[in-house]
Length: 247
Image 1 (cartoon, rainbow, N blue to C red):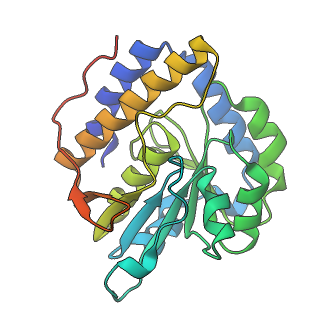
Image 2: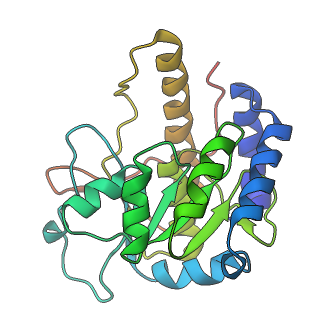
Image 3: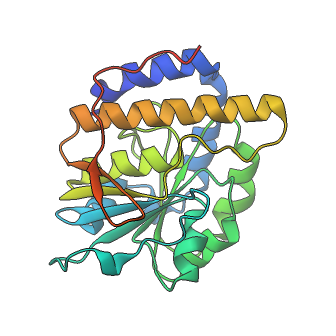
């Protein structure tokens, strides 16, 4: 998705959730600074060939979902590509699956993401206003291919092809890369594990936005978007033309 198409949606989200641009920009600047030189230039040129023309399975962390049951899919050529959303990298590795890409804002089990990177996953690190300490701690520890993203206009070292949470951002990436189909596995927009009431409500607000933004992608993206259910069925993700306020 073009940034010009996506940006108005993020502006609504940012206003609703109260994200400050100065903090977003500071984290983005730090991420760009820490990315090794070979991984700053033209990130999409390295990502797109991993996903273009393939079924892309975006793996989430819905309770009880586990790793995607690839054997339930018809054989395709080329084979499907996996994009793990943050902590789902550990789920994939536990099943012997190495994602093509890991999309992370570094708030999950980062050691598993580092291991996936060591085994060949390109890790797309996202900078936002609250994760600068994690960027400082973890980015230098990744041993292999990295790319960076943020919520503002694309620049040399950092991309923005749409999306908000790790999961929907991974789906937007697959669409931008020209996936044949995008299959969402392990997505749950209702279950919230936080016990603190304030954290719980904030998480729910983010999940509402994730669901809405995937609807926007289904309506405006170029790749068919499906929810992959545990019974093996594929259900077209419902399209939505606008993002509603969650207030």
